[in-house]
Length: 120
Ligand SMILES: CC(C)(COP(=O)(O)OP(=O)(O)OC[C@H]1O[C@@H](n2cnc3c(N)ncnc32)[C@H](O)[C@@H]1OP(=O)(O)O)[C@@H](O)C(=O)NCCC(=O)NCCS
Image 1 (spheres, helix red, strand yellow):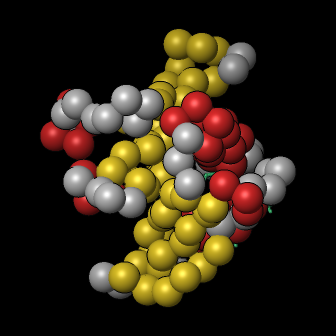
Image 2 (image 1 turned 90 degrees about the vertical axis):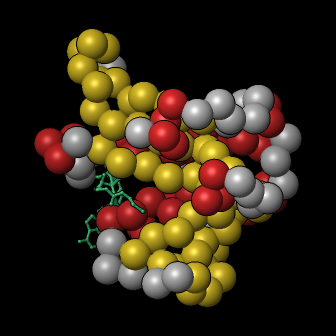
């Protein structure tokens, strides 16, 4: 909760995802925050409620936040730490154009640079 309620630098934070056909329905969030809350890298992440999985929602939401990160905030790159066994999340990262750069603390680290963005 502390991660959600704290103040972040301009342009960073958590975005709620709602169902387009039912805007009152919260289905998850995407984050863009300083890695481990203090940076200097900026981390992107995503999490959906269970019954929203498998419809491309995470990819669509993350793509919007990537556009914001590079276009509005002016970041040069974003990173993500994803558990090796989380194939769906690794696939979301891959579809965004993120490149695997190694393992950190048991997580696969992905990076997306401004010029590496692909259409999801
Ligand atoms: C990970 C998560 C956000 C994905 O959300 P989603 O909306 O279902 O993702 P999308 O539909 O945009 O994309 C998922 C992709 O992974 C693929 N996929 C799903 N399960 C898979 C599996 N077991 N193995 C391989 N690929 C898989 C899907 O086919 C899709 O790829 P495609 O578009 O090429 O077909 C969601 O499952 C979630 O919230 N999980 C729990 C929290 C979590 O793991 N968060 C991420 C922590 S790093």
